[in-house]
Length: 116
Ligand code: FES
Image (cartoon, rainbow, N blue to C red; front, side, top):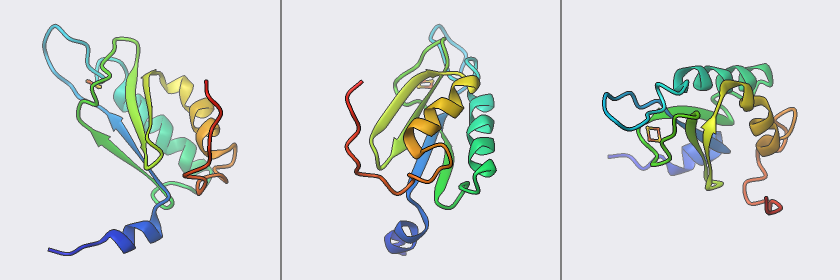
């Protein structure tokens, strides 16, 4: 076992976890609500600002407990920010509000944000 905390703290400022859960059943799931398209929109926005992978990584994940027919759920860590009902077209505004228009506020992890 290797402890890689220092390595990751050096490389990463934030990690976006995007639910892409696909399941059959009576409950909504993010795959049916555009999860994959939202992941691609996030990666594209970050790539355009040279901020993909380092300093911001994007990880597809399983259910975050925010299931909705209205869109995808995602979490931004270590900011402890959570969103649901995200559509691909919401991604630019969402990421701009989190990281700045040019992803130049990436390191503002603990900046106090105004209440919504
Ligand atoms: S299926 Fe995506 S949050 Fe539950």
